[in-house]
Image (cartoon, rainbow, N blue to C red; front, side):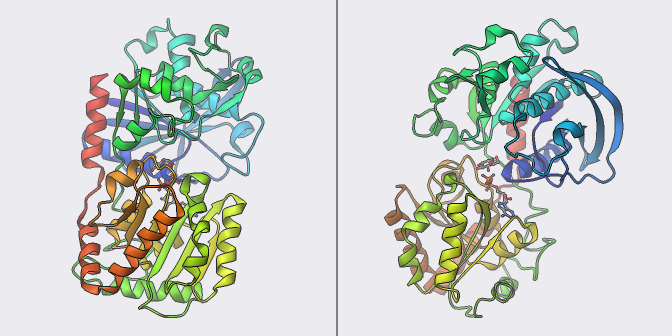
Length: 464
Ligand code: ADP
Ligand code: GLC
């Protein structure tokens, strides 16, 4: 079957978070199972795709009244066709998701380009849109191009990676999109006097899924639905949850490309070497008996670091080290900076985005902390399991689905005391070396490779 995906990021070309990991690894997994897969991405300034070749020069596209001429470049990567939409006017900017006034046009063009590619270059059976950035694919297909025989028989799937990012734009943006004015109503893509790209995708796609079974249930409740839970309940017959897989070629302690030392569940000596190297790199004392907690994350409210703030005083007095790598909201960057300033012999922070360091942290830490408020799937805890780095997580979304009490430590209530209690349990278990190692090994044996999840996507595509 031929599938054309549409998304805003994919490894190794451009990445800000887990969405990119999925678009870099699900397509090759489907290819291994026999499907033909294309992926449509913007070509940003930061995009690195050496070897991509032009396959269509000067494709004319329209977003409402605005005409664009774009080039399409293609790179075959691990068997999948990655198409890059080259429109410097919209994408050649310092940031991928900066607060640009024309973001609604930037991502409307992405959907139009995907339909252009589906028409001329790669004719799929299913158009598979990811997140709000691809939310207009289905409404353009079902309204603007409704009578177009090129697209007869084409079906659409929307995968929601995060309900918290909805692509909501002021009502005035609607006039730029070239959609039928009748679509701007509460049963269509209007959402609290805004144009909502995510809502548009939910309303017009043939099926919707999200990235873990638990999150698929959670988003149908007011606490997790970000205002769209009622709509999702109405569409619940079309909504499913498919757990993300991970790419163990990139995230493998036995072969991983970024590592100081390789190791496996049978021979953990390389993990100790990784910890020593990490402590040295961070300028922390070489106290290998002391447990080291790792954090690698976007610093957004979603990730729950206000709970860490709530236990900071307690944490500072424990015999524990911590390293945090991330960037995002200043209040969280400052909180980690203050912790490091308060106890420089225990805590280290690196503000920024650093792939190689993220791997060294996952390898070198003893525990990995993800106290998320909500977590659609979460990949870092899965990487940590494979690295024998025991996750401490809040039991929500994909964290609840991937971490067990015998591979990690979970807490339920979103409260600092609950986090503290989970860390306390982790520290007590760490002190019992043998049961700690058993726990590490159980986590390392878990298999979240794409094979079974990609097969679930195949079943979903075919059910359409
Ligand atoms: P989310 O997509 O919500 O950010 P995930 O756990 O699904 O959460 O995926 C996060 C991905 O981004 C992981 O691959 C993680 O290693 C990576 N990542 C997040 N922050 C950083 C950072 N500061 N430097 C390097 N990699 C990061
Ligand atoms: C989103 C979610 C994260 C998920 C990722 C990939 O960024 O926040 O939980 O793992 O998408 O699906």
